[in-house]
Amino acid sequence: MKIEHFFKNFSKPQALLIDFDGTLVDSVEALYLVYKIFLAFFGKKGTRQEFKTLTGPSLREVVAALKEIHKLPFSLK
Image (cartoon, rainbow, N blue to C red; front, side, top):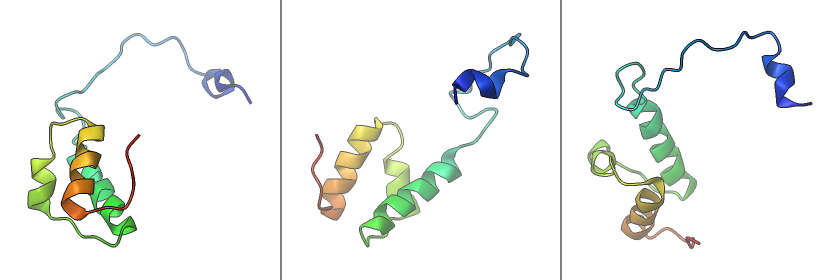
């Protein structure tokens, strides 16, 4: 099934909203949940304080930091 099928009943957008600073949607709690699930996958537990220190860097940098901090058994390529 083509992607166009899902949008056939939508009209052409009149505007595009971009929310980079969390004004419209606060995604921090969702990201915190993903952080906890990621660490739990490896049998580790994170803290809210550690999570706060990971705000800002790229996802690749965050994963590299968690790998080092928690001695996670995988390689980044």
